[in-house]
Length: 102
Image 1: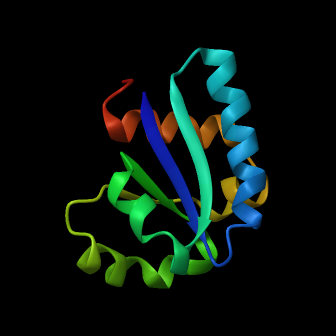
Image 2: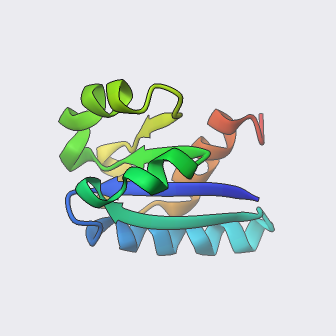
């Protein structure tokens, strides 16, 4: 079971993408948990995640997050995929990054 989190400013806009990704995961029988958090409240969740997706609106935070959590796998969500809520596409990128697909 994979633990995937999405991080944005307050965790609200990523909730929509989270729901789209959950639907895609269920359709594909991909066992994972997907949750959204605000960047300031996510330290514990970041440490426990298999991968942390960074919303485009906080991509400027990525260098500091990598410094604070050097053992964490981070991935920026493409602005267009985020804006159009392409949950399946983002999920496939996650699966590839985690080595769960080709």
